[in-house]
Image (cartoon, rainbow, N blue to C red; front, side, top):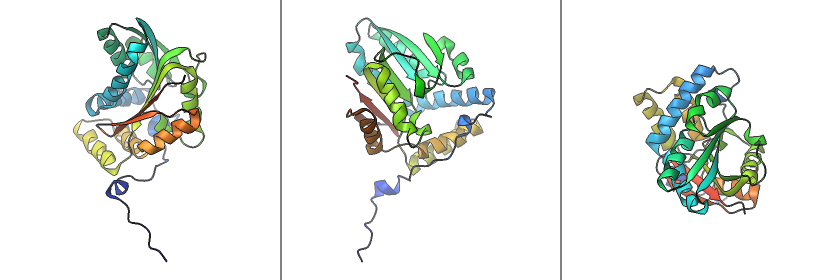
Length: 239
C-alpha cells in the first residue's frame, strides 16, 4: 500500500474551508452592533490592505471609462471602498458615480454620505439591467456563501457589469486567522468583529478556488492576484 504523499508547508498552513455562521449574518444581530462591527471591518480594510487591493484593480479600469463612470459596490458595509474609489477617480480626472448596495437597512442608512447613491438589496437579485454598470466591486462578501449560492452571486455580478468585475476576498490560512485574532485584541475590535473576522479568514479561498469559481459561474478566465494582508482579487471583463 502506497503511503499518502506528504503535505507541502503551504498546504499545512491552508485549512479546509469552514462553514460556520458569522454573528453578523444572523437575523437577531442588533443593528448597533452591526454598524459598530462594520466600522472595525473598514478599519481593518485600511490597515491590512483590503481597500488598497480593490482600488488598485479599479485604477486599471479607469482609463476605459471616459470622463464619467458608474461603480457598484455590492456588500458595501459602510461604503469605505466606494468613497476611496471616488477619490481615486477624481485624481485621475474621472467622475465616478458610486452606488453602495447592502442587505442591512442600518448599513445603508449609515453609508448614505459616503456614496453617490445607496441601495438596500440582495446580491442574488441586483436591481440593475444587464451591462448597466461600468465597474462592479464585491469585497469580502463571497466567503459568506457556500454551495450553489456562490456561483449564483458571481453570475449576478457578471450580469450587470459593462467593463469590469472586481471580486476581493480573504486568502485562507492558519497564519492569517491567528494574526487577525491577535490584532483584533490590540486594536480593541468588538468581540463580534473578533469572532466573525477570524471565522471569515477560515471561510476564505485559495487563488485556485477563486479562479475556478469565477470560471465555472461565468465562462470567463479571471486575473487572480495575491496581495499583502492575505487578500485575493479576481477581476474579469464580462464582454
